[in-house]
Length: 469
Image 1 (cartoon, rainbow, N blue to C red):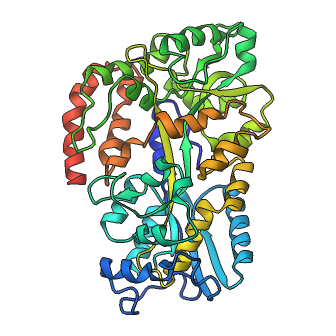
Image 2 (image 1 turned 180 degrees about the horizontal axis):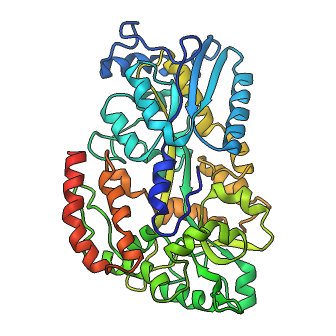
Image 3 (image 1 turned 90 degrees about the horizontal axis):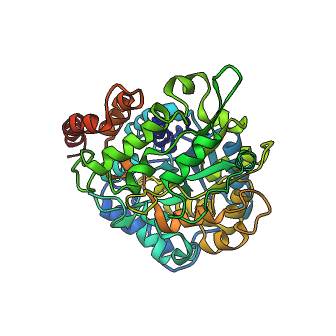
């Protein structure tokens, strides 16, 4: 997963990057599609029946047969190295299985995918998530994996985080329901990191790792004491940065939609939470302003020891392990109005083309990358993710001798109070992109949150209806 940092609107950029797809196929060794090959005739029901047949015995059927498939993804140098290592291990385990791994720039991903689909060169296995996953299922691009999962010996569904598998269910109208069309690459709990040295210097107790114990009021009081100006009167160290608008809104009882297509931002709960986030900078001066973010973003400030509290995901661990100060993670602050906390739980998935020539091998690769014990162990030891396997996450992952010390917070988010990103209720996110763009009026103080949501709701509703109905 990538790092997205920029004040209040970085979350939208993040959700876009999290789900980008990649790559192109070749005619020799890549994904091969045929409209009349006996297995892939364009009929979804026929595809599902034939594609799941080889796994119906409950064994690793076809493990010795030769095949060559293509896997496409995206990521930085670290992720590319990790996945090349995993793929090499897969091909060593299955000597007759060849996998071509292709990575393309995130910003080019969906345009490239659309071109590949139109040219009937869809990769065999690739990344998908969020709104784009919903769109791909609805358009018949993805293979239904439910029967393969139910009959294959490769996957023990009872040992996979329910939140991870449910993310890739889709019944045609809503995610989280229906059959499974993907396997989790990861589950990304968004926690609150804090600089322990700064808290020690200020003589403050650390934020609680237990949800509900540390509130907005507690966080604000600490942030004021942790915000320090230099001799010229310019703030040198901020108490908090990148505070999650989603966390505030959800914790306060608000939401962007009702889950059934109705935009619901024009509520007191939503406006109050949004104003709370804005006022961290506008009123209390404990968080960088948009102009401050342009000069140096929150992530750069945090790793430089100039931010006391800042969001982080498991994928940040490798960079944080080398920081020159002590740090840990806490639960997101609870709303004092509800006593509840919330944060988003990101995810990216491995999906299989409905027209792959090698459905069993494509499923086998997706299952290996997603749920194989060795691959999951390598992934968490490298600091890339929390294991998708619950027993591993609750056992050896918690026992790691590397920071964060309170890594149980990651598991609590996954199992208790993490929520899917906002866009998961959509197939088209123009409405959400518009919200984040327009929200700058609140972050800069040009408009109150209450006035903003009142004017913005009908605009977003029209965009949602136009793009999703």
